[in-house]
Image (cartoon, rainbow, N blue to C red):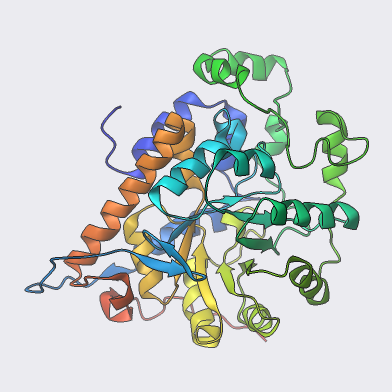
Length: 389
């Protein structure tokens, strides 16, 4: 294994190894990609307070997320098409997360199915739900997650309408990839990826194909998904989904104080401050900029996690110091997965853990529970002086 010192090292290997359409799928945002860029850039605006002469023996990054013990305050976020980044990608990511002691979240739009991941792991994982117009399918999907002993339902709220991602449209993104002259030329340079994909358990959306009448190939699947995301999703429907699930629920895609208040009101166990990695509403504020206001509004009413923009253990520390109880990583683990499979996901987690632990020590803290705004130097105008009615 090459020497990996940070997440960008994995990203460089990932770009060389994975077909362009799947690299672009992960490494892009909607429209101008302003929010996509701000998600990472805004973390850099926050600085850290160095403290010395503090006993740092016996440090621990361990904590809990929705009552579940975790090695560090990180969960693997739901990422669609993960099984196209590496053969059996969801299974390998889930195994790495389980071994490391952090939650894995399976996307509705995964390649490996709920049952595939459950069969390959020994501990419960989280399942992410996209609400579809086909209510019977949604009910059966939720039941399948129950049958697989998933320990939490993550309901994504910010994909009622699909944001336009220019790169995906230009690449003709599909699973499996469409064999055009352009994609064939690119795939010929990614022979190791192709050889591994030949032995993959699945190469299509495992949670959908075989579970919806008339869906048997990529073309019929594409037509179905294009019109299935439910634009009528509202708080009443969210409450019904929560009741249908009957277990712990995390509401993902909260980026506004009023929405955070509503999420707390309907009884969510946790919310995820997220803008879908900059892939939905371009021009929205970054997740880390919105976190302080949301914490001030509901931090004592509901557990708050943060997603979008995390690329280092220092980013994790900053989110926790601003009040979040946990974080989600998407691209950071996908880089590792695409670069070197399960070992790459493990390496990504090791890198983040070491950065978090070392930074925590240099800030004078022995546990993540001791982190707070006192560990940060925050610009006076961080969050912006935005006006809204």
